[in-house]
Image (cartoon, rainbow, N blue to C red; front, side):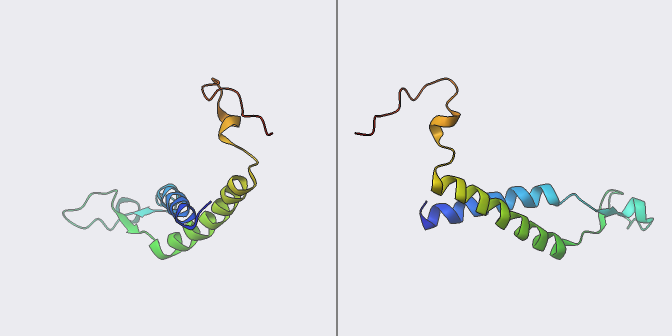
Length: 94
């Protein structure tokens, strides 16, 4: 895996993880009872973005390390997930 591929893979994993972590532990204005006029009751009162960035980065590093290990070592290849045999037979080594 090249450096650019590794960076792109990390960014994709980071953004997907961030979008999964973003809605966790949100305290809405409706739950807190402090609805500001002109806003929705579901608007966040406390969003804790700094903590979510840190959690996202730590989880992303772990997931990226696992994915990079699998890609670099060839533990799982594209042929392993080719369920319909569209790639044809594997080339012989020799």
